[in-house]
Amino acid sequence: MRRKIASLTAVLVLAAAGYAFAQGGMMGGQGGGMMGPGMMGQGGMMGGSGGGMGGMMGMMRMMSECGRMMEASPVSAEPVTKERAEAIVKQYLTNLRNPNLKTGKVVEETAGFVVEVTTKDGALVDKIVVDKRTGHARSIY
Image (cartoon, rainbow, N blue to C red; front, side, top):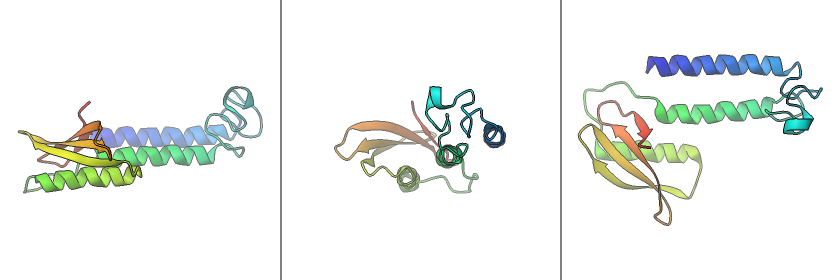
């Protein structure tokens, strides 16, 4: 868990440094730069004619959403229940803002619960494992 937080912090620091460097033209800005109009469109790789702040914010929001799913809650005295596991995955799906996804079958296993993510039509999209002890959720694939 601490390693994931440290990794995410490092990525965010590098992203901020990249943004500062992008103001000089490498990823957009006023001049073409290395990834300017010729390769990635007018705004460069991160988008926008002002140096890419909009694209950077979108990327940071995406990383935040992924982090919310993957972050483990503190180990509690009580194990996660089947209902709580389904609620964790439902909250994740709400954060994705995709109205076509829903939770499906929930199967209890030794260390956790496997919650199916399906489309409204019932097609399997993913299976999420929720750890009974921590509430940590991850894709089974």
